[in-house]
Length: 444
Image (cartoon, rainbow, N blue to C red; front, side, top):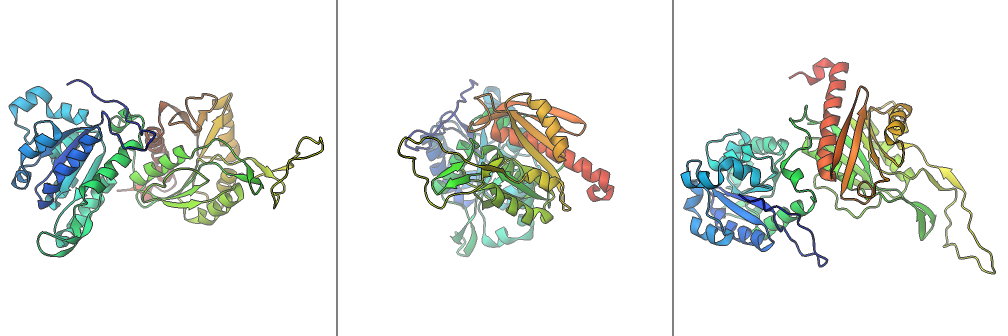
């Protein structure tokens, strides 16, 4: 099948566009399946290519004819469809997908997905694809509240699935409570928001590094700083830098996906905090340091991504500084050094595993190696911001990860994709360090 993927971008008017995105919409056997054609139609209107995959029981609630009409493609529903396998086999279909959303996802489907079953086409595609998986649960409220369902959801979340809903309200069975599938427009918004946060679509289906994570951070607390700081000159002026916060926010999402409890201390940025991450906004370096030190005793890992201003004005004026009149020119500012947040974390009696970031413009690797040792970091991630295509305010980055005993170059890619790869290395080094210090702490 021809490769139809291209990069969807927001228009200037803010219109959602999923142009060229390849999405599998899975439908399992629940009454909420009658809503799914509306979701398919909305995805198609936004430019996505949609392949509907139905389970056997889904046919009891919605027809393949309807779904073919709104998707523009024949519905797939069997591993044993000779014609479909000849034209676009299930493995090719799994590789084709940028995203898989299952709506509705019944209690039975959640159970089979959590167990890693591959006894029908939908479950097989989920196992055979590296694409992200979104689940829209729909079931009776008692089934939803059952411990078995909660266990299955926890496993699926740990595996990286994104769970959408469910809503609470009247149900087809006559009862009221949680278990209603979210409305198609809400599901469409969730899918498009998720998709439009990526600029490198190959990153959704292909990991930067082969293999799986060396462990996970379930039950661990991760403290991350992100963005710039602003150091006031007067009420309307400040000293700052070009940091957008995107890499730090991406790392917060990546840490959440490997099971960590994540707190993000963020300087001023134009980003929406990741759902599920506790976010603490700050403005200047001293505020950021205060928040870090307050939370440090509970942290297992600290990741300092923020581009903290090295200096601040010795005195911030209470009133706006007026432009000098009468031929006088120039303005002198006395600058004093800001606290070194990462060095303070490394020397703390509550010292966690410490990861720092370095933005360099020359001799990047050598400067980063020296900085890691000087500040007592376990790991440092360095990028060369002299390259205008990466780093500050860019959608992409390229970094080298340096730790005691190793270095790894991660080539230019989206910041989300790099965040996942960086988190792989952090997890591996953290688990190794934990095992060396206390072998019983990582025993199964």
